[in-house]
Image 1: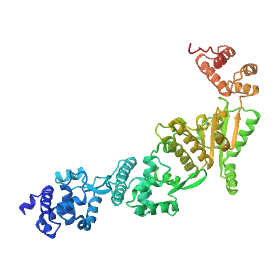
Image 2: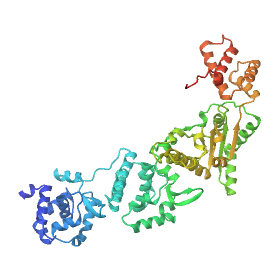
Image 3: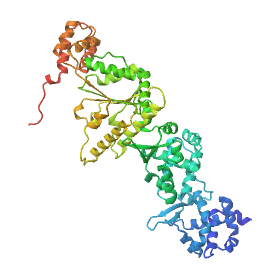
Image 4: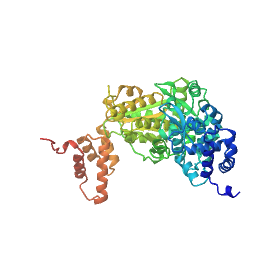
Length: 549
């Protein structure tokens, strides 16, 4: 009894290892080391066989790879005779006492003992897998990344990977992701698959998931091939329940490419700030219709007619009626519009006033934020924008307007035989946008000052094309009177005749005049001041300095 009280974990391990040497794993080993085996079993909650095996792993802890044949040689028995104990080794792996390691040179599996396990034995405390309770859902997805990384490197078996993911979920039941995932009632195998799809989307920004991204999960090719067939044939429960969906390529379904379904993203990832997606969802980049200031705009006869027609079409009741008829006749219900013309002719302001009139929010696309220095990220950003827009459309309410403002750089002619990575990225981004427009259901408006540079493939995909001309003399006169109400008719007519300004230029001058009004009051020569502002606005009137020799 006195001897038992002096025992510690390393002492027990040392005695078991000593008795195990050349023992051939016989029953005599268990008799001679009975006291130490029982002590270890009670302390670590292991069976007798598991305690002996754990002691042997500790004995070889300094080896980078511990193989079954190493243990067999120490015991003086053949590796075949140890096959009956493989289930016990699997228990040690699942409880994280040892880790599975793949020795790549000869494709033979081996094991290694983590440092935290050695530290627990050294400090004479029972090893417990670390607490997976996370402070945030982001942190939990970081753990998923670690676990799937270990599985991909063959450091974890399928079973150990599954158990570890399950423990992470169990430790974080308060997160909406876990609650909603568990709410699907998926069997463990398919729940693990769904976590993997979620990990690939959240951690890798991947919306084009192919089987080579998934194949590492299973231990053998047979199970992997069965999974692949279930996905390709559409019988996988994740597809059947619409939790994941196929991607499309040039309007055709690609049964080899998958992504998390839009509604699933909305349901599972609501507590995550997913860069472009959730920044839009939280209101950043989403311009509310009721925050837009009313403005009177002046058009030529043709433009006025086209803008009025588009405004009537975007009225919600009319829009829904047209969409229903289009769908009934087998057409997709997508309204892609191009506003083109010289700068300052009212293209962007027209989008704002259409949104104001029809009560539609505007989802603004910032092309400079989309473009990333990292290979593949820009393309994924574009896909996420369209995914988020579809989610907004399907979530009910009025479909917002997807606005690509100043889209010159994205709809211009694609480069042939692109050699540089930047040029290839631009072409890929354009191809993705073209593909998305082909299947687009909603309202997309792009504005550009350089329609002459537009790729023909984009031109064909815009259903409505409105050219914004510089305003006529009468329109310019109306603008002067609208923006500077104190201006009399003669002065407005003179300014309209002398300067062929766009609406944007006239607005600039009106703003400068208003600032002067605030600073200096009305006691000044109004027309003279306006003429000076007009001359300053004309860039061609300014003296330009030559650069060079």
